[in-house]
Image (cartoon, rainbow, N blue to C red; front, side, top):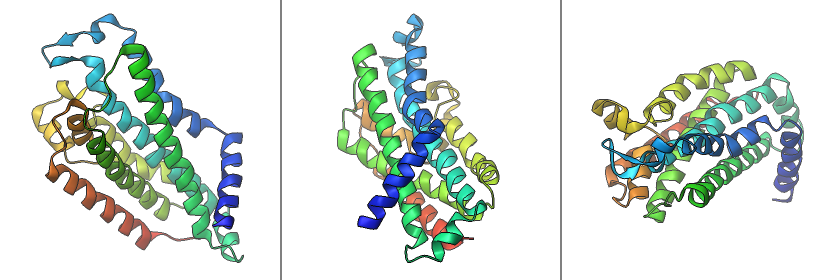
Length: 244
């Protein structure tokens, strides 16, 4: 554990020297929320969002943005770059197992994801009076399962890519549809119903988070599908992963 803590501390310092991913995960969703919230028409109810303002409905989609950015862009690029530079191979020749480097990266990126979502919720509430999740435990469960699934997808990309750029390209295959189905590009209420239905069962589980947010409660089937994706993606990543 002491070795893992030291590696995590070192990796954190390295990440802070080139903090593009950290700043992106922390600030991008909140900056978008502040920008959208500055438009008066989007702070009112509409026929597409009865009983809720557009900005209230869009917050879970910004949670999707945070998870996807860190899980499908940041961590695949970093880990594949380490393979490209031979860092993973050099670790394998030392008493420290390279898996600890991988765990350290997961700790850093998951921490940034949680912090980014926390900042989003806090400022959304403080600035625009966006209500928090009405079912906090349901939201937390959907968030954990969805984040695990997305990071598993990211690790699959990192497992097969030889370079950081290649990892980003592979992960983009999942990144773009997940962002679309999650309502980041176009709000979910404006998407065709069939697309909304598909998005309800695709990680990171925006519909489950929405239902927990609004008080309806996440559906067991949605959570079960998320759990299956989470386990499956992590198993596939573990099977495919190569240190060199």
